[in-house]
Length: 376
Ligand code: GLY
Image (cartoon, rainbow, N blue to C red; front, side, top):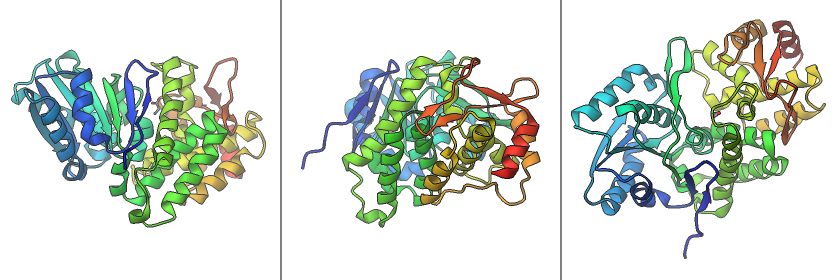
């Protein structure tokens, strides 16, 4: 049976391709948009064995005169450091790579951010093709050009905007993703629904419940509903980034931070033992509650978000042991904070964000955060 044509999203000056079996087309797409003498595939040691053979094979097929080199990093957020960036740039230098090199970032958000930052800085910038392999990276990290590494002071504090030459998303890869990681990725999908599209909010949650409700072997990973789940999310993100590519103060790209001020606070206070998607789920529920308390968010919005997040077995409450005072303090230290006040992007209701005279960020006093979180 022939496969449906992939969805192509072209809102950002580069194409984002979404469709089954596209891993085998990654070489063709890279050769078209980023011709190179060397393709440097950066992946991790979990993804490499399952996805690198298709990508490397495709590069060899479509760019037969190019050299293809491969490097796997240790999976996990702890790898996203300046030390790994140094090791990877030293690897490229040792391989005598020059500006005629294209990086292929094959993996989840950690690989995408790290390999993208390598590409942004190596020889003052070389192309990167993002090939995300987790739901979270497909719908969020691979699109929009934010790349970087973490430091002991926090996440993504050293980085750049470096838009990819193309993004290649093959939803069939998700069949090898642990269901818990699929659930965690749904947090960013739900976020896009809350920000921009109530119909997508309902449709995507129903699709995810159907996928998660049966064993992975019974899911049709080539189904158009899965491609649509991913491509509709990408379209929402891309249309927001297109309006505000570098996240200007108060700009619309800040709306993508919904759930992330509290989410990042929870991740940091828990030393990253809480997965990003879980922290964002908790953050969306509590930030919506904050919005209701401030009169910015329609009454009942929090209950809807809480119910849907829970229906996917994602957490809705602060991890035990974390106090609301600690969370409010960490929100104030977030990189989005202005002066001593935490900044939040809050929904008006499911499907639309609140915009004030100051744009998309609302600055909030600690006392108001503590009072709202204590009652949520
Ligand atoms: N992940 C939020 C953004 O790309 O702006």
